[in-house]
Image (cartoon, rainbow, N blue to C red):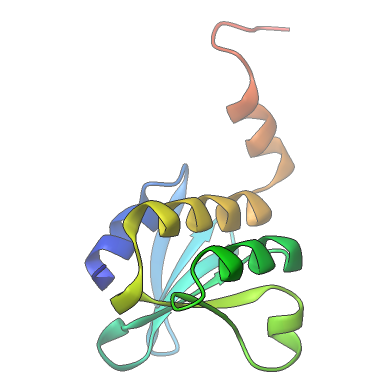
Length: 118
């Protein structure tokens, strides 16, 4: 997977925007960062999962997903080695990270059935 593939997936999330801050690309929903690209040539991504989600993705693809060292990693911050990543797996991880950071009002609006005006 390339950094451009990751960027395309992250920007495909509802209301996601990409900003360049502190030498890296950050992907946000509203003002909350759910993923970023960093490292030489943007070869590493970081996504914000729950500890349970992190454990599951690390179990499914241990060469792709690694806990960030220290306290942030214990809270679910997860590195993604893009060189070893499969797009479908990373797409699921990005979607989970996006849902973790998306405001509840946006999630409710997206989860409403079409045509529901109640």
